[in-house]
Length: 162
Picture 1 (cartoon, helix red, strand yellow):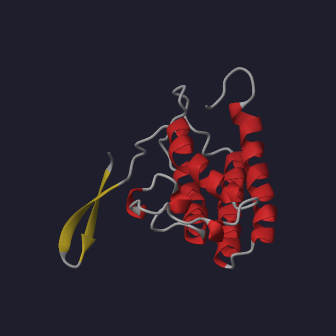
Picture 2 (cartoon, rainbow, N blue to C red; picture 1 turned 30 degrees about the vertical axis):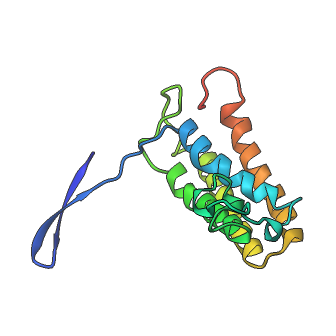
Picture 3 (cartoon, rainbow, N blue to C red; picture 1 turned 90 degrees about the horizontal axis):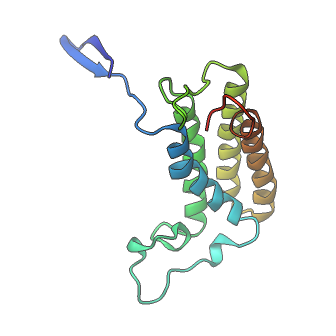
C-alpha cells in the first residue's frame, strides 16, 4: 500500500492510498451483478409489493427486497451501489481474474464506466420516484452499458480481462 505524507493542522499525517482488495471478477460478482439484478427486477415486479416473510426477522433476510431496507429502498440502494461502483471500476491497481491489469487508461473503459455511473444515477432517480415504467428504460440503459464493456473485454478471444 502506498503512503503519502501530508501536513495538516500542524501535524504530520500519513495517508494510505487505497488498493483494490478484489479482482474485477470478484467485484462484478460481489457488487455489480447483485445490484444490477435488483434494478432489473424492478422492471417486472413492483418493489413496493415486496414484504418481509411473516414470522421472520427482516434484518436476517438474504433477499434485499425483503430485508429491513427492502422494497423501493432496496432498489435505491442497489442503484447507488452501481453508481459508487464506477469509482471502484476505475481504481488503479485492480487486476482481472486472469491477472491482466484492468484497462483503466483505455478511453473505452472510461466511457463504459461512466455509462454504469450514469445508469446507476438514473436508476436511483427512478426508484426514488417509485416509477416502474422508468425502471424499464433505465434497465435497458444499464444492460447496454454492461454489454458494451463485456463485448470488448470479457467476451472476446485471446488476451482479455475477465
